[in-house]
Amino acid sequence: CESRDSLNVEVIPNPGEAPLRDTSVCFETELKISHQYPANSDTLYHWSIHSTDTVFLATTDSVTLFIDKDTVLGVVSEFRGCYSDTAKVNVSVIDLPELSLIATDSICLNLGDTALRAIVNGSETNPSEGSWSGPGVTNDTLNTKTAGAGLHTYYYNYTDPNNGCSNIDSIKLRILPNPQVPPLTDVEVCINTTSRFGHDYPVGSDTLYNWYTTTTFGLVNTGDSMLEQTIVSDTSFFVEADFEGCISTTTGELKVDTISLPVIELLAIDSLCNNL
Image (cartoon, rainbow, N blue to C red):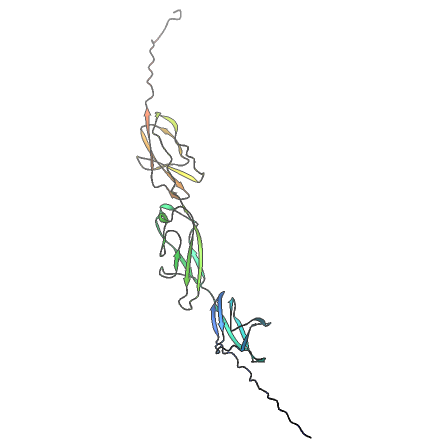
């Protein structure tokens, strides 16, 4: 007696390695990478990072990750339980432009237009390269009066034209207000006397007051808002305020008029009798 049966066996071909191309990416930039294979719902793609130890990432058509160093990615294709060899792609990291911004900690409100400067990869950039932003900024010029007094943040963004990698840096800049000249009242003083005049102005100790004479416009004193001088004739003084190198935009004038001393004349004879 003899019987027969049959069995159909399907030989599944190993899936091919997913076509990949080596690529480069800017430092700490998000990278999305996918296989260059026609979509097939029955094919799975297992992604991993290949270093000292293989780190599994995901099973999907593509992966998105941040790259901060040269990396080798691998992907294994799976079709109905059959696996391909590992396809690998080299991802090289491009350094971002190195930025350094040139600025002082503070500038004066009455300065007006001032150029903002940046150094990229060790060399100062041309004004047309990169972009500045912040209060009072037009192109690479800061107008302090437009920005106004206070602490402001300014940003510089630069994109390398050779590789498209961008970097941004910022600085904090304090714009100092214009100091005010203390209120002054003209005075009269006795001639040939030392007098103290001016005004006790309620300002910080960092404010200096520069006093000048009108005759020679020479500096006679730098200090507080009060001036002590010996007055020998009618005169006037100018005063300007100086706050951390910022000079007041107006100058105060104080006029000092002298009062003549009374003339004393004693009336007496040359001699007197003792028994008078």
